[in-house]
Amino acid sequence: QVQLVESGGGLVQAGGSLSLSCAAFGLTLSTRAMGWFRQAPGKEREFVAAAAWNLYYTDSVKGRFTVSRDDAKNKVYLQMDSLKPEDTAVYYCAAARNFYDSAGYYSSRRSYDAWGQGTQVTVSS
Image (tube, rainbow, N blue to C red):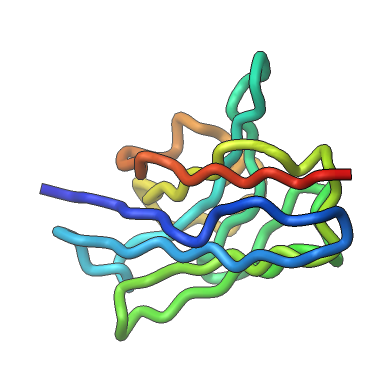
């Protein structure tokens, strides 16, 4: 059974940094592209970043967030710098069904078949 477990969320002031981790169980990370999504209150879950053959980011986090993966540790990471109040959300990691060289593929929730439980990130102004 596949299980994804996020950690590292918390409360931080605007301009600060947080580092999220996602540990994968029941799958071999090297066989999966991995994504990060977030969901703010009252909003739909949105794509943040993905680590596949290449790295992909939504425009609002480019230059501030960095996604990485350590296949040997079966972990994926999201380093978040220069945080803004609008980054406040529950952050989820997810395992994609396939590898594709396509930003559009990774930005769609339908491309993922395993999700973590989420970790709360709150950025105060």
